[in-house]
Image (tube, rainbow, N blue to C red):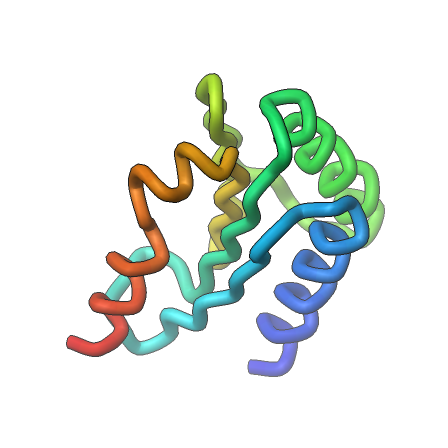
Length: 109
């Protein structure tokens, strides 16, 4: 599905453009996970995490992207776009929970 790739690429580009670090796209189609793709980005601080979210909303909503749910913690934000999940988190939080390892292992099953 080219649409998933183009949407994901757009999101990755926005995050990298706004200084998101170690931006990672994980294609989970066929894995049985509840979304088709996950994008993870490390933020520089709590304020930067919020700024990344604000920029995503500003740039994606006019393109018809629907933000179904947004969950926020002190060091992280998770954005549910239906078939794409975006994790924005500080370096400390990302290292602590290592979500990408879990998702890569899930893909291999």
